[in-house]
Length: 311
Image (cartoon, rainbow, N blue to C red; front, side, top):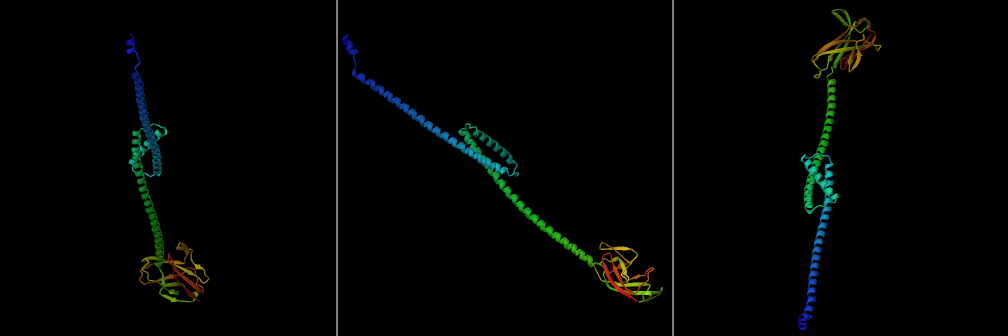
């Protein structure tokens, strides 16, 4: 029995040495696995942290870009200039996109890399739309400025033409007035004779006032191609030596002014150098000593004058 116990139950020094060595290997393997796991997760979390940092940076950049594009969109649309109708759809779509992105940014919502990439693509499209609209607006503004310059030049030209037309109208009016004045009948020669009538066939020239029955005014009209050929009314004004006009109260109008006259007669002007005679026989009037002034008129002007002195 002792031999069995001694052979089977006694302690073997080699076995005792092997047990601690196995435990050490186990612990080394466990520690190595733990370290590897820690390193794995450390690297993974570091990469994840870098990704989060990149996403946050891109998100902030996206917010800045949205602000910039919205400001540019507000600027160009604030001009109140109508462009192409198809920009209305792009404009409204851009506004919706900006509102959606800004809502996510303001609410601190999680934006995935895919959403961020899509948003950046939309931002590129939006930037292109705003840039095109801005360029169209620039071209339109230049065109408007060009039209304004052309309008101002046209106004200046119109003003110049109006001034020139006004000047021409004034010149025309002056010319017409000159032609009108030049067309007036003018006497080239006038003679006044005092006559004594003895009978129908016997008329003598007289100078003594008490013997005179009538005055005869013989006149020739100056040649004038501007004067209308045809009938013209001649008005006679005779002023006696005292300076009083001999008249029965009748008036005519010359240069918009009413003037009393002594007698009137109609002549037929032919512009042929013909001499005309105007005989004035007063009723109940006795000639006096002194000078009588005779003036002939038309409705336009004075034709001429002369005097005769009676003894």
